[in-house]
Image 1 (cartoon, rainbow, N blue to C red):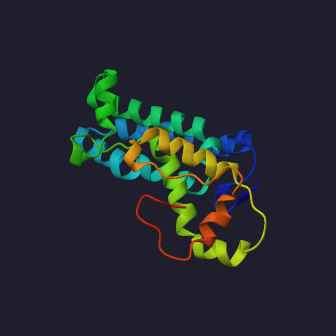
Image 2 (image 1 turned 60 degrees about the horizontal axis):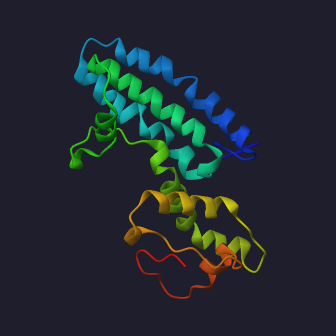
Image 3 (image 1 turned 90 degrees about the vertical axis):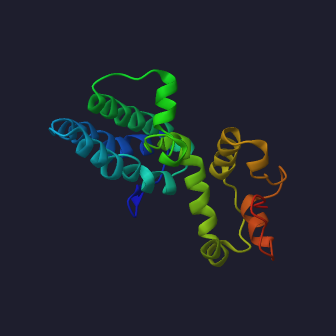
Length: 188
């Protein structure tokens, strides 16, 4: 099933849905970019029209554990397109740098797999007021939020990690019970 352009269901359903919507069409788009006779134009179109921006909706609206394979496949296609524009392959360290923002000396080709947990959590917490109205005083369990928190915390330094609720406390109830604004890094 899909609602508002996002798949809802099992991992296999979400992966196949994103593959049909995006990953099957992406190679032909990249081939068209590669056929342009101007490398800078090809790169700018790849950067601003065909890379991370194509995947943002999916990573903000679907749990990262349900579309991790699609993110990896998407990122591989984008990097292959970039390498084709360059006219050569890149070593692993250069690929890491390519994924950095331009402010950090990279090419700005953000990896959807790397950003998926943070994007999903951001959307979840941005909808806090809607969650209060809809789910107040109802039981809730979200393994996807817990999984996204774990994935996010593995990718950031310990000072930037988000705190998790006690094992028996429901995540949503913890968020809803906070009556005052929460500090920057503390979400519970």
